[in-house]
Amino acid sequence: MKNKKVIGIIIAIIAVALVGCGAYLLLVGGSNKTTIINSFKTLEESLTELIPEMGDGETVTKATTTGSLKININPLLGNTEDGSATMINNINNSVINYQSIMDLEQERMYFTGSMFLNNQPLVGLNYYFNDNIMYIFLENIFDKYITVDGVDVFSYLKESEKLKEDSDYILYKMLESLGKNITDDDIKEENVDVDGTKTKKLSLELDNARLEELSKAIVDDLSKDERAKEILGEDFTNNSTANDTESTDSSAKLIYSIYLDGKNIIKYDFGITENNQESVITYNDGSNKSIVLLNDGEEVFKGDINSSDSMLTVDLTTNNVNLGQLILSRGSLILNMGLTIDTNTKLSFELNSTNNSNVGKTDFKLSIIGGDTTIDLITLNDSNTTTDGVADFGNIDTTNSVSSSLLTDADMTTIQNNLLVIMSKLMGVTI
Image (cartoon, rainbow, N blue to C red; front, side, top):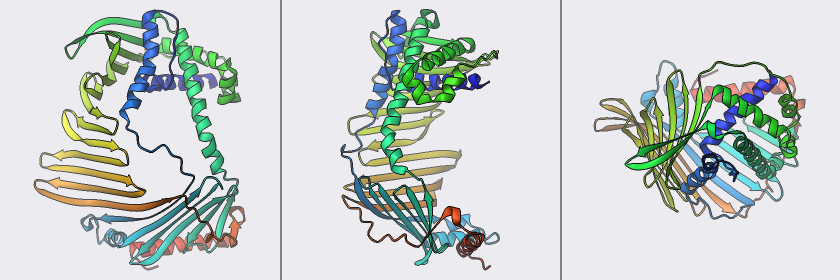
């Protein structure tokens, strides 16, 4: 049974890899087989090119960010009988101020956030990482820093690049094994028309039995690779050698298809068919780029893509009805979406986030539109300023602290009671 879990994981990863893998192979074999395998790299490169350059490439090791967050909820959503009207009013009269300080060289990090109700401090949270210790201070809840030892956040940050290298290697080896074990019999070739263009369609079709054969072969190949075994760990190595005789009669089939205009791939399909039902994700990579989701041949979602070096725009539709637009550029993210509730009513989502010259601003709005009337239900406004090269921890004093393992029952009672007091203030009730 352990090996069955490993096989299941491999099958899932194959499915993800066929959609957008980050590795490529140059394998010797039949031309269709080689074209299918090498198409993975082409797909990855094409999708990567869609994303505009978002930063200046410089690594910031020290920075201080200061900002505030304001939330407003329409009072019409409140109810005086259940107390929600009072809570909404208090939220609307509150603001959250925050500051974060980071120094990657000294491996120190600090964050403080405080909620003010009617200009009076209600509750706050401070946390501080230093020397593998996390310090937590709960303002108006507990009068000491609570410490947690062995929190090595910065080692994780340092190892994140290695983790990516390891995952890329495993994916590379999986696709190498896939390329070695698939045959030309697994690939179907046909000539089809795509928007008036005659193309050669190559499809890698794997039914459940064949997919399981390939998965077992991939497990076997990974278990013979020393670096893969080191990355995946002892449990994988042990599980990969376990015997498993279970089988399934599932009718599911995984299909990955590419469409070639000469040597250029202009369309990719990733589909799953089961019980006479088919779901397909299509990426059109011709002159008009788009991502389409199809269920049994019917379009249920589409994103029309326009991309340049500086901007990505995606026009969204669902069932051929306009859904909204996503715009991504350096220092800016804009998302506008609308969901039709009935013939006269629409729910609108608006998100606008910018970060220019270290000044950040995010505005979110959820509205309901009926005819010519627009009612804002929820708005969120965040603004912050970042100063690079500055990380001052001089005002942080953690001498008054207690280990989380040494908290007494009396301490826990104090924390619980103070939390109850804060919640009662926010809800406008007396305890």
